[in-house]
Each structure stands twice: as structure tokens, then as C-alpha cells.
Amino acid sequence: QVQLVESGGGLVQAGGSLRLSCAASGRTFSSSAMGWFRQAPGKEREFVAAINWSGIMTYYADSVKGRFTISRDNAKNTVSLQMNSLKPEDTAVYYCAASSGMLVTTRSRNYDYWGQGTQVTVSS
Image 1 (tube, one colour):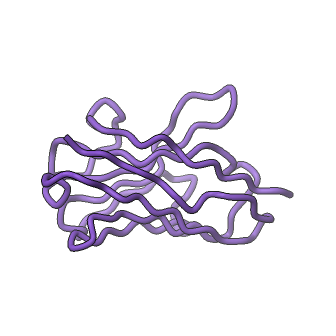
Image 2 (image 1 turned 90 degrees about the vertical axis):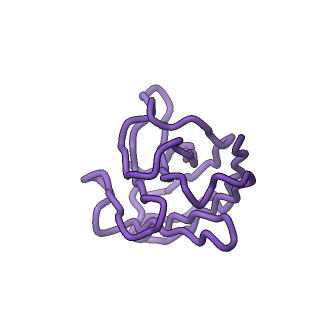
């Protein structure tokens, strides 16, 4: 079992930055790929970023590439998402997710554990 708790969401102006954090409990964290997803009102949940078990490999959605950075600290059981140059279209609830596998994956069905989500609102 892995439990995930996100933090760091909030309201920011366009062009600003936020850093989301996800604290994980469970002894399998260091062997799990991690991901961030988001869901805007009236839209389906979409992939944002993923990182493999060691932190060496990362993958990003085209919409956030160059602006967002995912990282992890296995010693602290945390994964973070640094979001820069935020746009109004980044407004969504952001979810942290843990995969049962070690490799980067963009598919939500490959993630077994999900946090409760944290709201990010970007004003224009």
C-alpha cells in the first residue's frame, strides 16, 4: 500500500510559479515510478509528467514541456512538480500517482495509487 498526500497548490498570476509536493508513505515508494496528472472542470484527467523509480528518466506532456520539472527524493519519499511560466490553461486539480512498476508511464491505468489532489488556479 502507498498513501499519497499532495500540497503546494494555490492561486497564482499568469507567468508565476508554484511547486507541488507529494509525500508518500509505504515501503515500495523507491521502486515505483511516479506521475502527476491534472483535471480541469469539465475535462478528462490528463497526464502531466512522470519519473522513473531512480529519478533518472522523466517524461512530460507537450503542453508543459520546458515549463514544468518533475523530481523525486527517495530518501524523503517525496516527488515534486516545479511549475514555471504558468498559464491560465494550467488551472486544474493536480494529482500525484504511484505506479506498481518502475518505468515511466503516461497511462493513468498503470498507476495504482492516487492522492486526493491539490487545486492550482492561474489567473490571467
